[in-house]
Amino acid sequence: MCNLSGADLSGANLSGANLSGANLSGANLEGANLEGANLKGANLRGTDLIDANLIDANLYGANLSPADLSRADLRGAYLRGADLEGANLRDIKYDEDTVWPEGFKP
Image 1 (cartoon, rainbow, N blue to C red):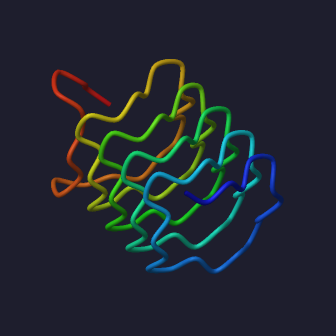
Image 2 (image 1 turned 135 degrees about the vertical axis):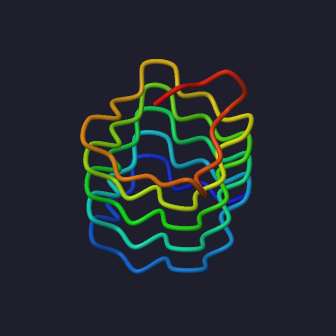
């Protein structure tokens, strides 16, 4: 498992990266390109994802509590089973292809 807890990855190009099960808690991913990235089961607790590109990202079972996803692009993202409790979802982009956790309404 990859441990990037607290890392500064702001603006990084992680498009298509396999970060399944990675520990990214408290990391700075502001403006990062995570398009198509595999973040299945990743620990993103308290992570800064402001303006991040998460188009078509796999966030199945990821811990996003309480991540800051302000203005993040979640079009086509797969969030089934993700923990979004306390996450900041202000001004996010999403579409009909975005898959939310069971019972979640954006």
